[in-house]
Image (cartoon, rainbow, N blue to C red; front, side, top):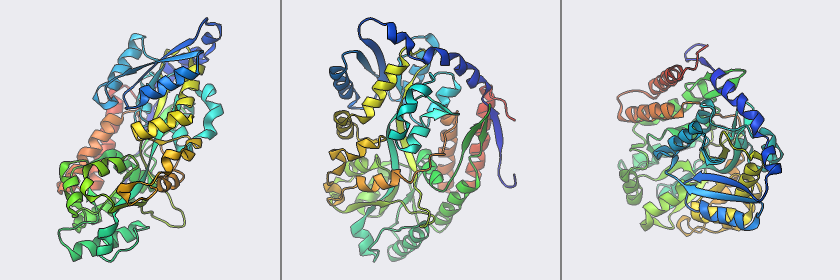
Amino acid sequence: MKNRAFRTVTLAVAVASLAGTAACGSGGASDKASGPVKIEFWGWAPGYEKSVELFNSSHPNIQVTYSKISPGSKGGYTKMLSAVKAGNAPCVGSVGFETLPTFAAAGALQDATSAAAPFAKEYAASAFAQSGVAGRTYGLPVDIAPMGLIYRKDLFAKFGIHEAPRTWEEYAADAEVIHAADPNAYIGYFGNDAYNFAGLAQQAGAKWFATGGEKWTVEVNDAATRKVTAFWQGLLDRKLVKVVPSFDTALYKGMGEGTILSDVNAVWDTPILADSVKQTSGAWAVAPMPVWDTAKPASGNAGGTPNAILKGCAHVKEAVEFSHWFGTDQASVTNLIKATGIYPAALSALDNPALAEPDPFYGGQKIFDVFRASAAQVDAGFQWGPVMTKTSGALGDGLGKAGAGSTTLDAALADTQAQTVAEMKTQGMETG
């Protein structure tokens, strides 16, 4: 395929290891158990323990023990994988969408397809789809991370911009207006967060990974993603966005001072921003992220977590029942919204009163209304790959270098593609 790398990687290792788990994943063992079924759950998000308490108080026949571990990227995932290997893993683990395929490739997940199937229509389509790999479902989603444009409404108006940009073309035009009027001011910034970039690519229609038969297709630098890099490379070349590391103190300093006027990011970024620039309370607003085509509006997702069923779980049916309750029960959802800051994946949870409260930091706006519309426009066909630690590391490094001008965004994509495929080979996945 001209001008883009294209590789296929076999799933033979993962498929073989998972096939052996399907038979013991029926949940049948619990039917003959005496007393309550006992399930162990590992996670780290604040507020999870309260939802577990609520479940236990209303489900005498299923009792869940919650263990708080380190966040996944800080050792939690390693601990889960080690426990699976040792044969003493919990039934349920908190595993991000981006990491689920890595667990699947390692044979660390239990097939929960039949137990989860009745609940499929109760979740955002993209969230349920990303709770599985290659046609198998391995858990149920708790939260998602639809994206939007978080912006300084007052400063946009100061520069004569009275509506948030609806399209990326308008975003670029507004960027030029702002920077021309004040060389120290920028419409937004360019950071090095690989998952934020993935959300932008997903919005454009990117398909980085796919499975078919026993193979992965890997195309991190597909045409849709290169459409995104071309846009941002243009802004970088014209110096219309501020280059600053994602979530860096310099970013929030600029936002607080009014030199960085917006952030295209996920719903979970709204409380982070509010806490980081408290002195600007009331001046911000949330709008839909700019789109490529107003006739076919699409959005991106940058985060989210399912409760995954780990290999060796003897009570899959009950583990799925708990996971479904965890993300749909109104009391649990209210707790998770307020304590954890989630945006729920369950469609029924979108009517939770906690999502309808005006936010003083955002001028009294009901910001979750924006993210509700965004979530409905996320492509359910986007799938993460089996070595996302390597992929995200390579991409984040490339984004940083491109921002600094030492490489281009297209070159960063090509390098990420190469490093991803190389890592797959290292892990024994054959290229086709």
